[in-house]
Length: 361
Ligand SMILES: *Cc1c(COP(=O)(O)O)cnc(C)c1O
Image (cartoon, rainbow, N blue to C red):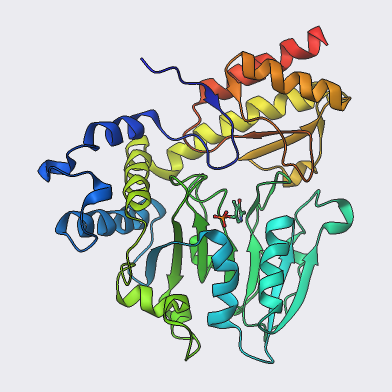
């Protein structure tokens, strides 16, 4: 038996054990081909089946109909920061963005290279401690779209209510909370997620676009940066990240077997409750860095009374088999990432460790 730890890394992060075991079992001979998935042609029927199954599973799990097109692209969420304005923001037009942390800021930076950006709301003045309320989001009626980051992986905040912006297309970076609970996907025109948090390994990004937005793509774009290329060629215009798509397909299968979004939501709620209970019980010791109403279910961030105690906490947790708890280098502190594959038992063990650590220190 391989030694496995409880992995609270923020991304790349923990994957379901059963998925890793399937990969291992299929590695040398994928379904009788005598080759691994990494060695077969991306034009083979075996790969086509993986690619199609991944898209079908994504639609099934999220309850999306045929008006949505699901793509599996390389380049990470960071490439989507550029592709979205390249495709949908015309010279002289304005795109609206809500700034809730570093990832939003990076998205804004890319859009500014294309045309004007209207800051619809920002929580920067508070150190990104909250998500702006829907009524505080000022989105012009003629904005090309409004972009939000549904979960802020670094700061530990998450939207629990989507902004109401009438006819303006809503675009969401859902990299760190996609498929972690039910969501009203019908409110979006496009949403995307790099896989290495809730969906699979690094190397692939899922992009889901509604047909009516697709019609608004600009003409004359570089082929690889035009969404229509990838829709027309079912994400295989060029050689796709075959292995990453294969693992993503396995994770989506696993998610379906768990009972889908409704079931995983229950588990994720219990997981985050276990950790936030510690923060609420000892607020002067485990000091939350975000406002209660904006707490993330996926990334719980907090500080201890001193940086030395934080170092000790991280080191002792690691010795106890609880790894990946260091906060992002830009903010410090502790970050507990509770993505789908982290079992409830893992969150409970960490909560118990927190209780004991406080007692001893
Ligand atoms: C991780 C992350 C990204 C960056 O993804 P890459 O695949 O590294 O480009 C963007 N947005 C959010 C919310 C993230 O968590």
